[in-house]
Amino acid sequence: MSSLDTNKAKVRSWLTERGYGGLALTAVVLLVVFPLVLDSFRLNMVGKYLTYAFPAVGLALCWGRTGVLSLGQGVFFGLGGYAMAMFLKLEASDPASTAIQSTPGIPDFMDWNQLTALPAFWVPFNSLAFALFAVVALPGVLAFIVSWSMFKRRVGGVYFAIITQAIASILSILIIGQQGYTGGVNGITDLRTLMGWGIRTEQARLVLYYVNAVLLLGCVVLSKSVLDSKLGRLLQGGTGSIHGLRRRGVEGLRLRIRGVYRRRRGCHVYAAGRLHVAVFRGHRAVDRDGDHDCRRWS
Image (cartoon, rainbow, N blue to C red; front, side, top):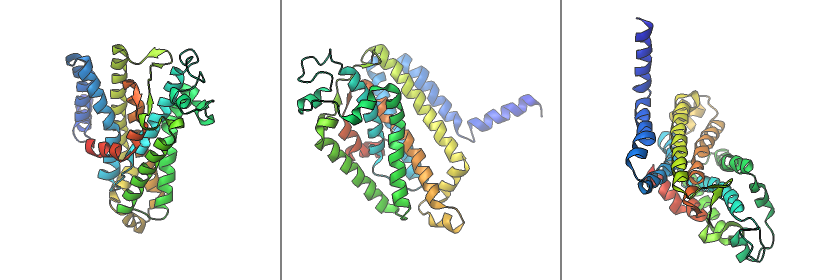
């Protein structure tokens, strides 16, 4: 067999057996066809649907592939969205833009709630680099803490689902109750620019659509690589119960923590990527309704 035939066989295997053919077709549709045939409004709607696909991919891996039902997916992309929204809100709350407030230089909802200074935990979000780091780190750290505390005690099945739903409810109540620090029911609104670049223009929405689509495709490729790895095969082999893996000598605690952590790291991109709608309703992203959206789109 010639080298050309060998390369063709490899490409054919890559496109068919490994399932990348459908992904390549999806990439063409998202990156070429939709921007050419859809108007700005409908393309923006497609961008919204694509952002829901991020937590859907995470939930499909977590529940569909490994049998771990999480009813708190909204918590993770909600935290990622809040991290980015905090930076954008601080940029929109410069002293010149907030001169009519009692305390210029702080977000408007803080001024409405009688705060006179920017809370300490908001200060680092003046930096875009820190905000991007927090988008990834905050959901990952929370996922590690939740998975360690529950899998260490061999909590699984319906109990894991109930606890994760309780975490989502607790965080939603906390966000609404601390409206002076979080924006409450209204969330973080009136987001205008990103490092001076207007995010409400038609051009900005097109750019953010492409960024969203590329990140989603990358997330799918990363998920497939995880499933094809030794970690992925072990996680799928332990679907529904970790005891079978433990009997075969596999350390189930570390295995599931790594699996949950990797799946949750992709979910937070949803809200961070969706901020071009110029409003972020934080409690709506993390509560039970937001998690219902995750399950529906998965």
